[in-house]
Image (cartoon, rainbow, N blue to C red; front, side, top):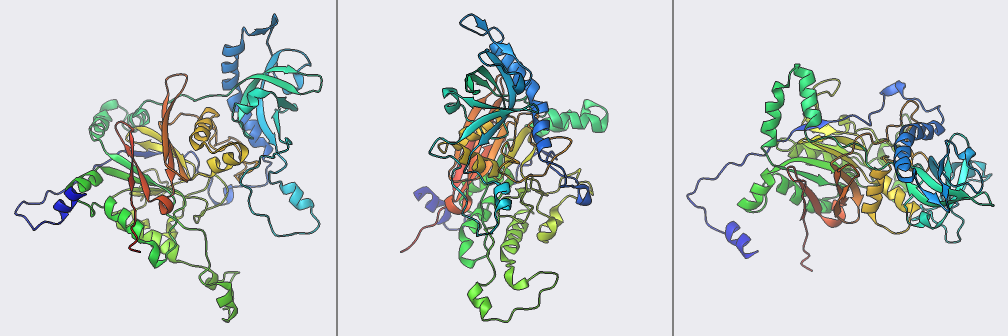
Length: 502
């Protein structure tokens, strides 16, 4: 700290200031979770088709792993047998079968129970956990033929939630329950090589691999990617100090020369959800009771709408964008659709920042300001990034014991499903032709926004895949920003703290 004071508290010198230039990065987003525009989206279809689509895609992968692991497995000289359907399981026969997990939990929300009620009452507060303490929770395995109840001690070791595809090996007992001996999950999919997609796109665009020289130049620059989540901007005057510190740091206006040098290496900012605080009316109901309400037009009451949070977010982004490119994901409290995948925050809500969006109608060339979906995936400096605003992990937390967020995030990848509990306990779009939540390629970095604490680890797959997992904390509560080295994928945290004089 003393060294910092000596740098900042000194008289002007004759040395000329060194102009810092921000490191540039390569940015190539995917549009894996974009839905059809406007009237092309339909909600009349059944959600059951999503489970069948997911099972059809992931069943071959999990069966291949199970066949390799259990092909020669024997118990008491009885060799295990593969059955194609849950309905084909026979009592007392050692076998294995693949299907979709369904957790039958009495404490889960059930829309059918709500509809069947004669009298509507206020909705109860959301439960912290769906787990019941009296042993009423059931783990089921189902496919298009039927459903089978799973039991056994291995279920307490393997994390399971509704919607994940697994293969189970065991035998059916006299009660009709399937006693599980072992479980296999699809595990990590193929992981693309660094720069693989960028170079492939360049070859397709130019008809020759000559543009690889451009990618090589970008590889020589080692920058950092900043990820922040949970800005929770409310628009209150007393709520901007920590946000201003973040803005000054990213712009290189804070700290001494070394801090500014570090800030110049930040090549992109990713905002992982919950940029806006939970919605609050402009005035309280008590004040509105004493004020004559204006006539509503088309059901819109301007007195109940507070534009300050969105305007403050727009001002924050517009200040950064001339110097730093920004990718923003919507979150649970942001002005976007509630059901997953959440579509991008419309640029019309951010009039000052929209000038930095893509200039092409089809968004084929991303702009300096890229409003994307939640979940989202894309390539930054050749690495495959994938992330979400935290809703999938927050929902998985309700199914399982404990609060090991990185373990939940790891299982997300090993199940090969970005949102396994949708549509059971998370709202989502009813896909018909393809379940877009299935993870087809393994990312190099998976970040989860909106978490209580910062955590990170590296996991490995069966074919040498390595994935950096990051739990991004809520900035408003912790003041922490995560920085990822674009060359080594090492992670560091910068913390902004406020001191009280009282």
